[in-house]
Amino acid sequence: KSTIRLLASSQVITSVSSVVKELMENALDAGAASIDIRLEKHGLEKIEVKDGGCGIQEADCTCMALPHYTSKFKSFSDLDQLVSYGFRGEALHSVCSVAAVSITTKTSDDTTARRYRLDKCGQAVDFEAVHGLKGTTVTVTDLFKNLPVRRQVMSCTKRMNEELKKVENVVKSLSVINPGVRVSLAHNKCLIWQKTAVKDLRLSVMQVFSYNLSKYLHHIVHHNNKVELEMLVPKHDCDIKYLCSGTGTEAYHLFVSKRPVKDKDVEKVLSEVLSRSFGNDLPPNKSVLCIVAITLPPDRLDINLEPNKTKVFIKDKEEILSCITDQLDSYYSQAVS
Ligand code: ADP
Ligand code: MG
Image (tube, rainbow, N blue to C red):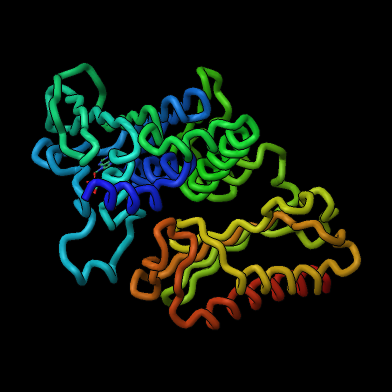
């Protein structure tokens, strides 16, 4: 049984970046206004995610990392109403089976914080009262210690540096779409990156993509009865080369209901509009920075496709695609005339 558990978990938790993603999503689900992420030795020795969120009720602490435990939906019909990042109750349990985990937490009702040590089945083995502020800190040490081959592969220097880059990308993409949250990322006591809390997506984009983009990006906000669309796209008269990145780097940042996702259809629509509008000015083989955030009512979305949730099904997708096209075409054509 423990082998089955290990196999299942090692598919959810495949790398340092997948741990960081799951823990950061939990912090966001807890309503944290600030999140501090610290790695040691590229995360293989230690990953710590500290949030100022709601904390975990004492009664839930015995089961928080048991398989399929989630506090995020109460009945099956809630699956249609999902607004949180998590809903499967898989992440904490999976991390426990491939690493040593401890969790410190305090809710606004608690007089003191409690620090729990979890075993590899996700059972809380003991706890102690400790000092701490409201919120939750999850500490993950010795990742993949019981999967020696994976640990060895992950320990090669090139691989570790690539993984650190992935962590940075995961953190940045969840940060950009949560403007109001302060986030910091540190490695071996060095601050790699940080973002302050800001008011809106546009300011968030400026913080996350470190150069001064505001003068090159146009902000479009559009609501129709049930779809909310927010885009930052190249200004019609901007020199497009400032927004281009080399081959292979991702420049289209797509979010569906605050989830970073990949979607070939939306990418295609963006490429088509940009080549219509910028024609020969578009350098070949380079991608142009665009941010597209779509917010849909939960019943138009199925995120239950794969464990890492980067693909989603959208109901009546054509309608969304033509909405994006219309908004962009109308901006670019107005701008020209
Ligand atoms: P899921 O996110 O799908 O519910 P997880 O395994 O990620 O499953 O987390 C299990 C449960 O532990 C959550 O439903 C939540 O109740 C609690 N939890 C985990 N992390 C946090 C956190 N940072 N703050 C508050 N509660 C948390
Ligand atoms: Mg979760």
